[in-house]
Length: 264
Image (tube, rainbow, N blue to C red):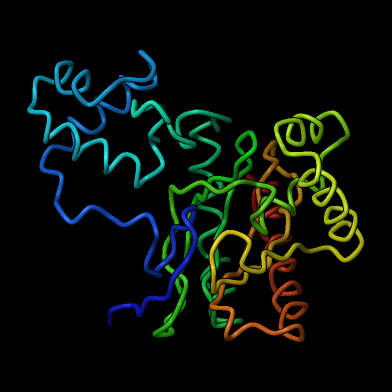
């Protein structure tokens, strides 16, 4: 059954309709899209005409390829209308083997978590100032949060990101706070004190209108750190009473994932 849609803000990757609309056309050549992403990473910002020349395709084809890369956060458009690498390629590269291991270990626990709480669950990793979603298990509710695998969100806004930031040392946290506006950084530091005290973080429509998420950090284990779990739901189904219940379920799943990572 198709997932109904409600509005959300530009950073989303859920099954709600987005301000950043998915292009209406299909991309025939995956190879061209991947090559273009590589060129942006290796050669720096380029205009549509530059991309077309480098790929040997028409300007309209290059524009469509860039549009898809922007939608998936592999690229972003600069004020001068050139295109540059997006959050997925730009910051905080994560070791691929570690991410694959985390995903394999986490998926069974995410499925049990979804069965327990009836909402969508995610696992993510800290990547610089962002969190990158490694895996999602969707709930079977008609109105639900959809798959965000591969997407990136600002760590200081997302529930899982804030949960991980609350575990960082002073020097590591300073690197995340430095690019933020002073007022935003001060508010984040207050939030992190609350998160450390109660053990979970909340994203109440900070990244997407109509969405509430709860996140907890996965304890470092097996040489892996910087991971978090979240439960995300339409705000209409969330309540102050439900948040601690979701947090308790998340903490149990996070502990089980850490145990399995430690067991190799």
